[in-house]
Length: 149
Image (cartoon, rainbow, N blue to C red; front, side, top):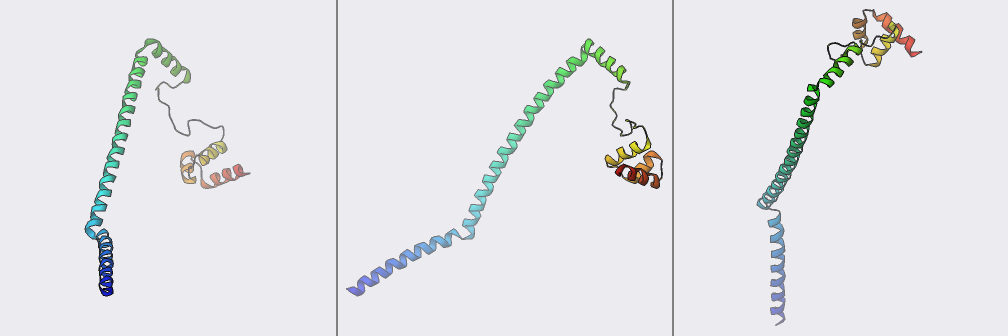
């Protein structure tokens, strides 16, 4: 009788070990891993699509806002009083072309040392300064050393 109980307990334990090991093996099998990764990729794609949709909606809203602002600006520019004001301010500034030039040499410093220092502070190389100001390397070095004192 004891032998029967021991055998029965052993069979139950073996069955439990079999079920546990079988589950662990199935969780780590390639097909289950592929399914898991496929679900993760699908979730990432869904999240990416939502993000892209949000960005597109935002850009459409901003484009619509920009179109409204452009229409308002066009209406203002067509107003004769605004045209008159703009032309009078252009004449006062001396810029008849209506363009703002961004050449660093437009604001002319009084002397060569100031011009050299301005170009150096703007990040121009010494070779570029030599070409712009039509001076030689020694002059650029000398003017730079005067500035550092």
